[in-house]
Amino acid sequence: MQQYENEMQHALELYLKGSDEHELHASEVAYLLKKIRKASEEEFLDALTRLPQEARGDVILELSEKLKDEAIRHYSTKELAEAVEGLESDDATDLVQDIDEFDEDKSDAVIAHLDDEDREEIEHLLHYEEDQAGAWMQIELFDATLDETIQNAIDRLKSLKDAGELENVHQVFIINEERRLITTIPLEDVILFDFSKTFRDQVESKEFRSVEASDDIEDVASMFEQFDLSVLPVVDRQGHLVGRITSDDIYDVIEERATEQIYNLAGVNDDVEQDENLFEVFKNRASWLFINLITAILASIVISMFDATLAAFVPLAILMPIVASMGGNAGTQTLTVMVRKMALGDIDVVNAKQAVIKEFIISVLNGLIFAILMGIVAFVWFDIPKLGLVIAMAMVFNLMIAGAFGALIPLLLKRLNIDPAVGSTVLLTTATDVFGFLSFLGLASLILT
Image (cartoon, rainbow, N blue to C red; front, side, top):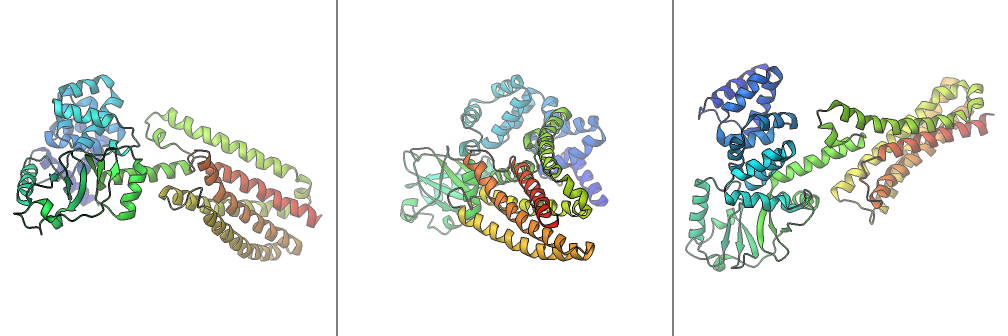
């Protein structure tokens, strides 16, 4: 590993010197810059200065939020404008937004330095909401009209590629004179055509997939996942071709969605966790811990209702955490599965009945198995037959509660237009602790006293 790190550091040094033999991907450069920054801020800034102009934009976008801000602070307005101009329209818009979040005045100055075409493209994309497909599309694409010859289209594509104006071309988008999208053709099919003929002579009418610029990006991501797509054309409400969304952008959407769900299930905020302000991170986590404290007090109140029973039967205090722990873990399994399936669109509030029944049945089966197991353990451990019966019954009841609440809580939150991942764990923990202790100690009071 250390040898690999040394080789990468050497490659970066040659890359910064302008060696054509040592090309590095922007993500590799960003990773090495992060290593350099940990060692020395001065060396980090020096490396930024020596970065090739054509690579700066891509590298800045790959940096973490903190290092990205340092890079934006380091580069002049003109240098940032040059970095923006070297990017495709979607990435250029992302960089401008990052600059704007760091310093609005600097962002305005950068936009002012851009040529009219780049400025218009970026301002157009900035009009879309962050969760709309239009905000994630790039305007650069390869289209052709029905009456254009295949040869002419291929020659245009070569020229655009040579000029560096197009990347990741997968399809030809066929449009009419009004720029309405008619169909899409994979490049692998185009090369089999008779180059002397027009697209009208070659293209057969067939269905194709597209999205509107106003569509939710989560729905677009689901289409990419479902149909294993590499690119989707974007049209306006009238069907005019306005851009395309490529799979590399969708990877970012999927990663952001998964990261947000994981953080939310843990009771932390994704955006806040990226903040370098320790107080903000502390405040966000503390707020959820405070809610957990309230629920823990509620569970303790339930326990206090049976203090006489606990005093009479000490083994209850030993076994009590097992009931709560099993219920909490079983509920978390169900909750995680439900939230993930809802995020993927596999279930929603309309067709969730079957999923809820499935999770409930699984919980009952688990409850019966572990009830028998724990009943035997309790009997052997304390030689009290009725105690084994109590914990067995409580185990079945609490795992049933865990399955039911783990399945229903996210559905309820979804119906209330609340992110199912946010707050679900707190509600679930409250239910399994309160009902777990209530069932265990309540049954003990009835059976053992």
